[in-house]
Structures are given as structure tokens and as C-alpha cells.
Image: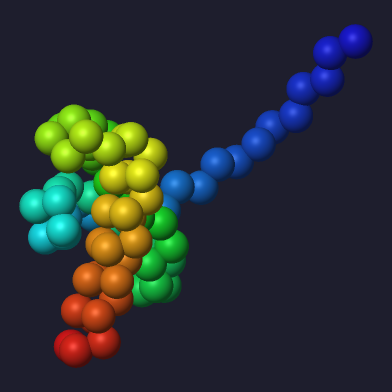
Length: 80
């Protein structure tokens, strides 16, 4: 038996930014809701290149960039 239901998907608007991290400049997508940062997603290709260049697992680089970008962007907003 198959059941179907209609779902509505809401997507937050996002902006692309470049942030300077300990790995260099990296592109990230930033999604906000009512002005607050909800999600930061580093660009996969930038993470892959940095992971390869530093001999690190991509997951570690992705998480570190995500952490640094959040801190940089939140600090920047606090100083507006």
C-alpha cells in the first residue's frame, strides 16, 4: 500500500561569502533566518583542495572551516 501526502518545503535564502580561515580564503554559503545565522556550508571543492594541500581528511577541514567561518561572521556582526 502506498500513501501520498503533500509537503511544503521552505528554503532559507542564502548568501555566498568568502572568508579568510587558517586554510586561506574559502567560499561558504550562509543561510539566515530573521537575521540570525542558521547554517554555514563551506564549498566542497575549496575544502577538498585545502585537505589535499594540508594532508588532512576532508571532514576535518570542512568542520574547521565551518567553525572558523561562524566565528568570523558572528564577530563581524557584533562589531556593526
